[in-house]
Length: 235
Ligand code: ATP
Image 1: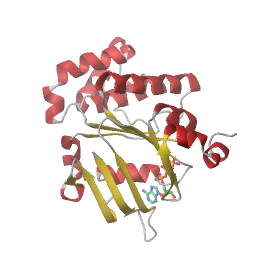
Image 2 (image 1 turned 90 degrees about the horizontal axis):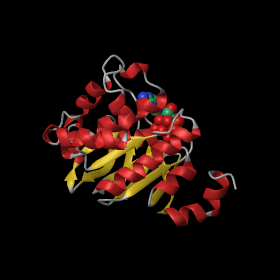
Image 3 (image 1 turned 45 degrees about the horizontal axis):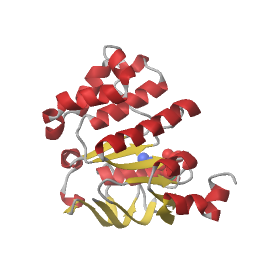
Image 4 (image 1 turned 60 degrees about the vertical axis):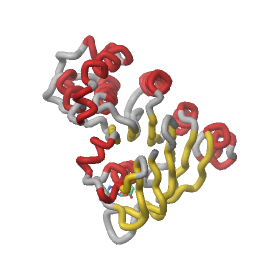
């Protein structure tokens, strides 16, 4: 579904992504893990078009994304749930979710999507009229995920959804992603610093270090890998 081939991208002369190749198949749950500054957020920004690649190729369902402006990528079915949640604080929960439904598929599927989002995340139904800025961090993250789902995506990209959340709330978010994926077969690409949880939730993982893929494999192989165990799992 999504394929990156030797992508170089960044903000200055020295690229942050130094030749990244990865692929996500339809229905797969893929996690990208790695230390601070490895380039995980830059990777997502490059896929969604906020950062232009300097070299390499990105395709989505066979379409070369260099031909698709950033705004058009959401309409192809790529939803990017950015880091730090970024809800609209002065809009209600429901209005935030409506903002996600700006794609054609999102508008068409709104009635069904909102029912499903409220079924997965009932706290959003209870608080639908509350201003998003007054929610807890975990609830705001749920709004951000719900907003992504409201666009009827084919690929849901989540940038560190557990950031700044208490472990129990982060676990709840990971469990929800597994549930949403199980219910819908949605393709998920997750960037995370909580390596253990991310590799438990996903089927396949990439370890990004200093802008390069240092390791990749299915979740069992990665969790059993000595380097991953030492560097990321504290074993
Ligand atoms: P973190 O988990 O801390 O967010 P990350 O793996 O997501 O880390 P990036 O945010 O992609 O890493 O950052 C990679 C490098 O790019 C860092 O050295 C960072 O300082 C730099 N960088 C990120 N955003 C910008 C920007 N807008 N302008 C210039 N440099 C940037």
